[in-house]
Image (cartoon, rainbow, N blue to C red; front, side, top):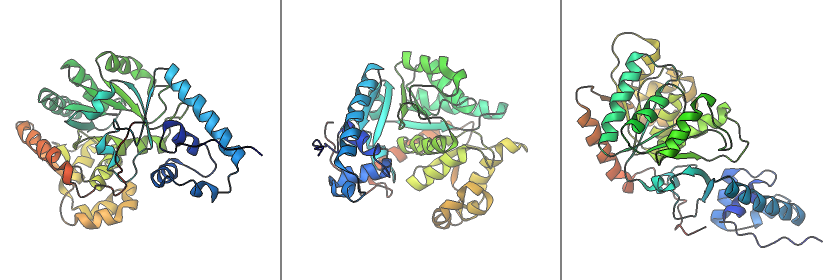
Length: 333
């Protein structure tokens, strides 16, 4: 009979091993580790041989990341950002490349938006990104073309820190056209971050899940431009669920690529589920918002107001009503 090795559930290898078991995904792995109870694994009818094999593969995987220059931070590591540990579904592991100290940067703001911005969107993204960067904020975005690229590029131009959160494994970069941008982020002391292991593809499910990390890591979210069905709407939904304030520039004229901004700024929150198909899973959130619009306007000639609100949001993080009850004391992995 194969004897299973002692499994340190809260270690990197332990969390990786748990996720290699049948019917155990990231959320289940983290729940088992939080409870420090292997009985949950036994209840899945997983034999000792499978556990031994999973642990051996996990140990090899840890070495693979080390060799590739990719850091791995477990949920229980003191370096794990508290802002992410407080969201409803924190990743059990974070994969990093670059300056991990940025995860504890005291001021982080997400700047996101459409992949096909108009001149208005690019201008708004550049002006807002410049204002927050010059005020000492780190810019979080998703390395996508369009608004994300403008946000990262503006941060680099102003020597401000920037974090790119990917919806795929760090063994590849998506989109490929932004590989030079990713390299410049690393060379400037920035950070590439993912919750996904090597070989994980940039499919829709992973990219949407990535959006909750952009909002979760930040004190607030700026949506520079989006249509009603734009991907940035996922970030808006996650931000609202996490209690992060959302800011949008006020669009001028009629343009479908900015229609999402109008919805977020002007329509009662309770109508969002009817207006936006992607919000069907957030009926409780829509009801809670009532008549209040979800986003706050950003005036082009008064960006100081945005900075003031971001500071207030940062100061409120310690008492945020969205704090999770699953936050243990952090220890070294």
